[in-house]
Length: 116
Image (cartoon, rainbow, N blue to C red; front, side, top):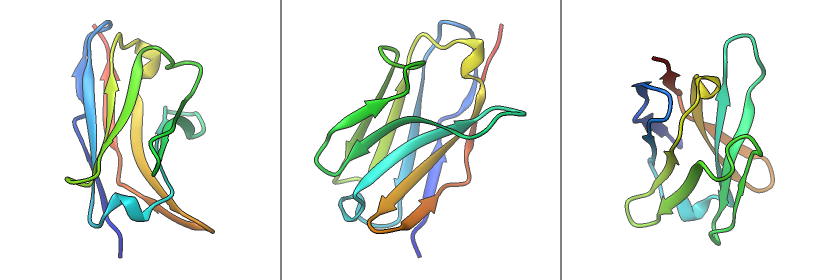
């Protein structure tokens, strides 16, 4: 059974930064893609950023230029560096791993609140 454990969430002022971590219980190289999703109250879960096993990345338009996804294949951790945070970034952030064809794994989520 694969476990994904997120950490690093918290309360931050607008314009501040946070770094989220997603620690996997097995090698992240065994996954084709890893993602960060988020879900705000009353809204659907949305894709924030993704990174393939080869290192290719993609981002939601709303976070491009502010967020950076990266991976440490030795520590089996995926990071989400979030800069210039806005109140609309407030959400529960989830780590997701995909192994083709259809094996999906989710973490429990970590709360990010951007407020003054």
